[in-house]
Image (cartoon, rainbow, N blue to C red):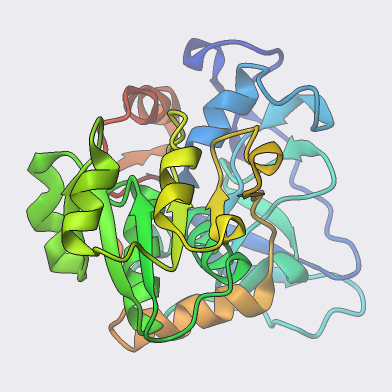
Length: 306
């Protein structure tokens, strides 16, 4: 099969298209014919070696964790899915080696759910990592219907999902973004506010009593500002600040979860979760996709089509 690989830590230029053996399919796994693979910043950060201290990486690596495709075969004693089922998932395994930037991927069933019927394969491939991150961030701070939440970097891939999921859960959402993205946030159901110096004052103009919870999807040392707006300091979660726990907030690393994926699919099929795919590139242009991701100006998602 065709796959994208890199043989050592480096830049997007190190990516190559190669022929590799079809993956073996063990118990509790299915073989997925990849229709689209989602691109996330963690993909190129991992390839640059930034996560080497915490993740086992075995070169050569096929990158990618997000996938949408069709089940082509099932492993021994695996009845969760059947050949022909359309699935999507966050295929993170025990170590980094055999990812989703390929024509086929062997995926543990714990990482998959049935693809949302109302989404294309390209849209579905953009959901898993970012959608799960957003949903698990909201559950980590224990949000309840009727509460308010502040989402920092609300117009990005993860933030866009966070806004939509929070609205679906019955929350009031205030989202930070540049002025050019404010109308976009309003279309998702959020009240936009400009990020940067003076953020706390601008939020209090919208919510004089502060907010019930806050999600940091960007970093830039904003934890203390968010905590100043939240009644309970531990109702702040960050996916970007490595010192979040030391500051009394939660630091979240998203986990594969079939039930959470099924919930996101339900939201999508109910029309409560949409996916803005800004760039859909062929598999061979993975390096270009990484360059677009690293530029940090994408609203929504980047995916590779296979």
